[in-house]
Length: 399
Image (tube, rainbow, N blue to C red; front, side):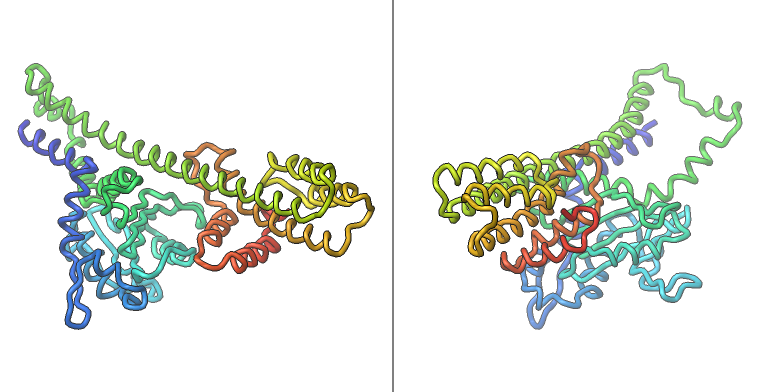
């Protein structure tokens, strides 16, 4: 029973986020060292360099150092993987690492330059690599590790198992540190070598006759036997707790981010409305009438239609004592309508999360594209033009 106790202690360490992060830092981050010219760089020093100095680093930095060290941290050795080798009968399929275990292909690991972020093409590439396997795959650019499982009966469907921001993980003061630590611990649990090698041993140990089972069974009659049984049961509960905790923290993080985005969008909506009303040059009562017409739309951000906008236009004309807007006022209205269209499409990701349970991952292509455009580091006018172009071809949310 002492062996069981030792195993329980080891499993406990593997599921304790703080201990997992500590082990990861020692096995991966602290081992990383790359030479550029006459100077060597540690992990964080290297990532602090401009992107232009880190381009084309997939092989020497990501493949040969970060990913290899991470695989060793997971318990694998060079005899457990094929590196950059074409898959049998599929010369075009060349994963960076094909990791094997007693169950066959455990998972594939695909690396990208440290300057690149995940795009749909990468997921399609990994999906192609995992056809005929259990569907497990890891994407890595040494700043982020994304572990997924592709559905065997739906080529476009996948489940995110763990998503780790390494840079956040190394900042213990970061608000999302606990979430990232839990994600890393879950990743270690799901992709550790023991998960792919213990199955056959478990089958062998339980595939015995009733007589042999009773002969080797440990009676729960002593205090030590009971304690060992409790420790073993606690392992399973710890693993379930870890998986649940990861999902809960991710949901809370997404919820908080969505609420902040929604507040920002509402404030921008209010500011644009105020700017429009102040530029009209109407009487006080005329401005109030237009303001009230716009405020009636506030509760429907994300659902505002072209008809709603035209009704505001009609109110503007009536408030100005005419049936048709002047060229100047019409120009102001069109500028406001453009901003409203942008706010409407930006509001959709927030609105989607607000209307659906936070635990459901948002995988709507429209929402992800809007989020990507919004976070792009470009000037506001150019960003708005991109959003308007996207809006003109988006069938899901076009208003």
